[in-house]
Length: 306
Image (cartoon, rainbow, N blue to C red; front, side):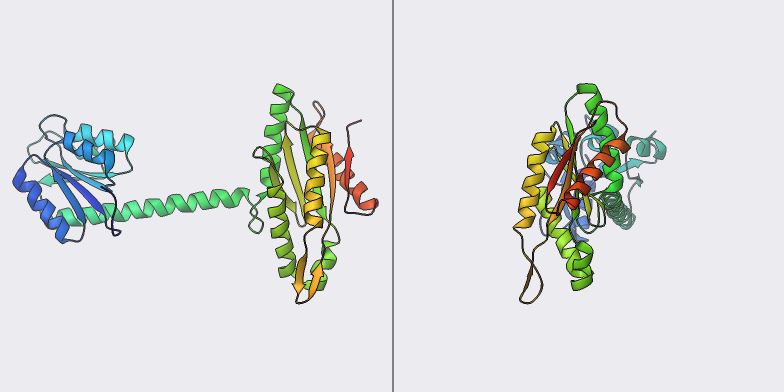
């Protein structure tokens, strides 16, 4: 069974045929898709192939009980459970909720009350998903630059510490690129920041297209970018830098109709030296980048630790 027409799918589990058929009919009349079975074993079979958002189960069932079924569902499925029990049954609300049930209903069940509880569970389910999506979005925003979608400088320093720790453990080489767009302030002044933002976005795409899976790129600030190249020596890192420089050099931007502009980049390359300070590592890449600027821009320069 698959989810169809956007409806919520409900699975009813009760060994009393009259009860389950009445519930099934009432829930379908209320606009939901439902299925009714007599035991937990049948329910488990349907749950293997079906997409049910809510299970409504009696606690007292022929073999596997409703609480055991609830426990299995909460451990293995993204499904909410409403548990039903009679007044005389020796089960508490706390016991059902602790196992993972979303709600608890006393039998004999008033169908109007059951529908209200079902709607409440579905509302809470929707709110929970929205909350999860919001948290995921906030986590992405915390580590990425909103414009370029590259990682931000905060993320850069965190990842740099991780890569340096890995270097110290395994002695695999680690290289760093520091990249700065040439005359970018002039471009912004001449054509406006919206056009400048288009350059930043496109350049970020170019960087990513030139990197391997293990490499990572960051917007360091303004028109400055950094790239971490794990398990990469200086010579190989220089090749990557030249690939990025050449790709941008061949790009043409059109900030105004009939106006084509070439943007270039100055890049500094360096390789991490054993046990050096992170600030020293970054400063050396920065110094190499300024050498590229001093030598006419649109260049790649490399410095090793002394």
